[in-house]
Image (cartoon, rainbow, N blue to C red; front, side):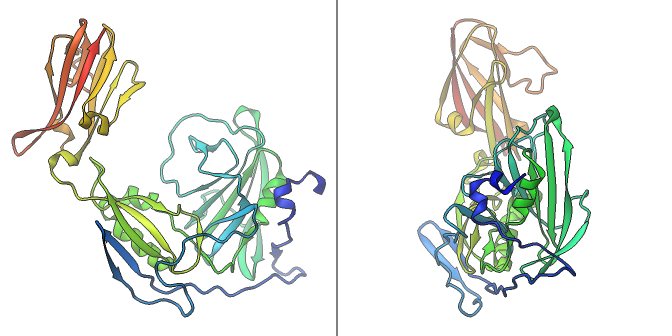
Amino acid sequence: MSSNDEPSEYVAARRPRLVAAGRAGRPRSRALTLAGAAAVVAVAGATAVLSSSGGAPGSPPPGASAAPVAPAPDLRLVGLGPAAVALPRGWGTNLTRCGVPQQDTVVIDVATVELCWARRPRGVESVEVTAGRPRFDFTADETLRIDGVQAQRQETRCERDVGNTRVCTGTVHLPSSGVSFRAESSTGAAHVDRILEQIRLGSGQVGVPGYQTIAVNQQGSSGASYLDALRTAGLAGEVRTVKVPGVAAGQVWGVSPQPGTMLAPGAVVTVTLVAQSDGPADEVRVEMAAGEGDRVLKDAQIRAGATIELVVGDRIWAYADGSRARTLAGALDGGSLAVDDWTQGPSHPHSWVAVAPGRTTVTLTITADGEPVVLGTVTVVVG
């Protein structure tokens, strides 16, 4: 592909930056200093408790602006640790289906992928940013230097994908920081190489660490582990809490700015943790589904008192997650529903079938210390 075919957002920023070891050329080299142990700000209600262990000379104090500094108005940096890649601002984040990019996107901080079939549309580019060991199929075909730091490059390969789409893939791994950039394109190999040419170090910034893997593996202890990861990266953490029924207290529920955002050392990242439960009802998350499972009532709707309409013959069932989910039960007040006779069903006996026109109230409960605890009610109107 000629340079005239290059996307305009890359033309201005493109520069030869990957320099093979032993080749002529002088790669740029720039020192990067990160803050030491950053402060952690714990927010409880309206009271902030600060705990600081200092920082590197010249680093912004905790509470400094978390606004990322972009390399150019039409590009943004996304990375982990000191390593980042400059991408067009129009790209999304984790715009995938079953792990397959559906639009131009960066893929970062993904711990679980839905198992299903999906094809990559033509003309879609992506880059996956990961920390730790590179993928099992990574091979170092060439040793390079990026901004004076040694890197390993897997050559770009193109293969036929699902739906006869041709997908090209290439990877750069940085052993010193343990970060890999895997670029893919269903447009052509030149686009993969162009993406990987935008990897850079020495911006003076650090990427917000991912939290999804920690949350999945450690659950209730993930909050403390993630705050440690922020401190190690040279960032500060501001803790907020949110009630999430059925989820272990202390689990990371979200971070802002999102993982991969490049920040100045000492900048603050807001970490949302699951709050301690106020009682047994908070230890369970309950939902109901009806028809073909396409009509779903969420936990918050049920606790607020929801209403749903069915027709005779429709089925509706309740299900729950959490430490007391096995004690879930539903009491009926009305004659329009009957217990579903499918005794082998996954939701039996809290599954019902609409048998006659009318209204029935379903009261959902769990059991704690031998006593029923009401979670919420659902009014079922059968027409």
